[in-house]
Amino acid sequence: MELNELVKIRRSVRAYSEERVKEEDLKEMISCAQMAPSWKNSETGRYYVALSDEAIEKIYESLPDFNKRSSKNAAYIVTTFKKGLSGYVSEGNPSPEGDLWGSYDLGLQNSYMLLKASELGYDTLIMGLRDSDAIREYFAIPEDEIIMAVIAIGKRAAEPKFNPRKNLEDILKIK
Ligand SMILES: Cc1cc2nc3c(=O)[nH]c(=O)nc-3n(C[C@H](O)[C@H](O)[C@H](O)COP(=O)(O)O)c2cc1C
Image (tube, rainbow, N blue to C red; front, side, top):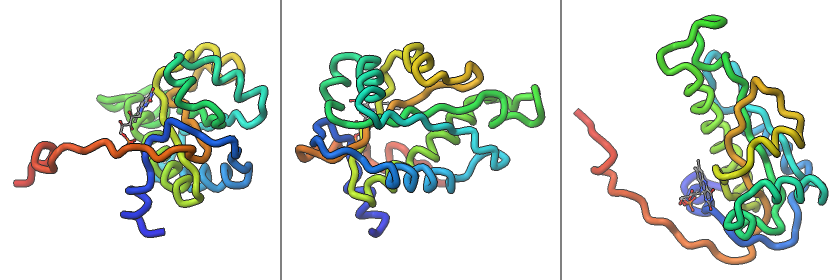
């Protein structure tokens, strides 16, 4: 599918059918995420997927009520990054922004993943509000990883609305 079309199809979806994402498709999405650029090719993004009924229930329970409602029936991808690598000039020697670059790299990876999901016919919802301690405990996520998004993944049960964007002039300066 052409990029402009993919970008248009990808919307935050807040109503999912009962059709569950296939494991091989998840692997394809995360392989695509790996193709994103990263600081010194450090690839510090990590992915924890809740695909079984038990795991989905655990992650569902870690969400605030409004995110529970929005992601009902979906599976979940928890995305994290390893601290102390991306954004570091050498071991223990951070650039001015330090670990913010790890977050930047993960965002790049996650957007590749989301677009691949759209190409494969899936829908997604990034959720920043969740109980990260409960998620860390369930997946045994090491302390040197920062938990970022929980991403619902499934197939839309209703058409999402388009959220309008700012005017280009409001965000761009060219000299
Ligand atoms: C970092 C981040 C955190 C977000 N957290 C939530 C969330 O907790 N719940 C939710 O419903 N949407 C969440 N969203 C989705 C945004 O509201 C959505 O991307 C934005 O309104 C633009 O709409 P669109 O994705 O349909 O283009 C989040 C998006 C991002 C990038």
